[in-house]
Image 1 (cartoon, rainbow, N blue to C red):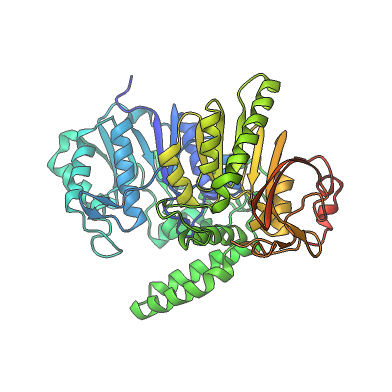
Image 2 (cartoon, rainbow, N blue to C red; image 1 turned 90 degrees about the vertical axis):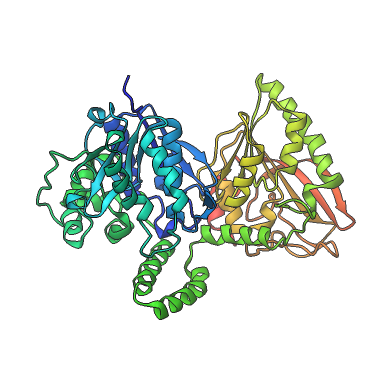
Length: 539
């Protein structure tokens, strides 16, 4: 048995905007290179905000996702920047488990087996270690003395911002510690992990040249995405196959089975990325330019962000501003519909239905709750039916992080996802309770077309007096389609156009004098979703 276990560790998604560099082809390729060549026993992927999109769909099954709340301070010293939070998390996880930490933009060239009998291994950054020893690649045994010493040194941390102390504890300090305690660490030359270098000439060598890069002394290449994103953004398998450079040669085997346009960004995504790139260039100019940049970002982000980010930000704002009310105590509150007699009736009726389905299947059910919100209703269901395997899903990352920290266990998990576009978890029964009322017709259609569950129950509020055409459209937001004060208008009616689904009313309850909540079982193999009318419907 080796001293350093074959356990890979990654950190990603510690900021909700991913720093303008979302999980992409480059990250998937680097992950696959590490798995194929290191052959790890486990791959832990630590995140605060889970990635999404087609490349994450491919990558997620290769890792063990672990949602965390990254530390905001260490030893009383604030960790204001997500990069510094990641620095601390990687040390903590490798100290705890041992193994190999890799930045998500580290491409592995060959096996690490020859390195696994040391206590700690780091690589120099810069020729002659002129920069220091970078933490993009860390190999260590569990509870390694050098890593403990390194973490302890964060008592003097002062790197809150991009200034002279930016990389003091991540790059320069370990080099100082290695000289003072050489018996605790093996230091490899820069060619081991950080070759080619990160200057413009060497980046061009990687991404624009096919002049061979000597790799005899190289275990992995840090691709410096912070400086090379212009080469990496919007890459598709077709673009990789179309060019003959060092990087494209390395990447080709890992996308060989994918269509040329797999993962191609939408127009909105490309506009957003162009905005980030342009504003970041301006932001490096001077303090006055940075102030202008900040103002431009505030005004243009809502215009250029893609629809997924708009939805996420909308619901984040709802909870932050308590637009659905507050109980005066809870950090998150999903509205009066999650409390009181209506919620109690829902739990009574749904508990019996789920018991019946479990008896029919002859085993415990896997329940997926889309739009789980503050988990009050889900928690009440689980108190009645503790044998359920429950997955609560919501688009608000802070809400999912809170629920995970307070309620998750072996049978209860939470996933941050956008049901309109993200992969959905597997299950026997799907519950969607008073979610559609806050979405546009186009978004509702998109969700319905993606649902593949054998059993689907949808609950929606309706006015007591039906006035106007069915399914009036609305923008995503806290409000609903009808006037709940007067009880007049129309709600979401899945049996009517543009959905035209076969529905069966299961139970209903009067929430207040002007609103009734109806729970229906939905037949997805019917209506517009099957016969193609959805694409023609007026939404």
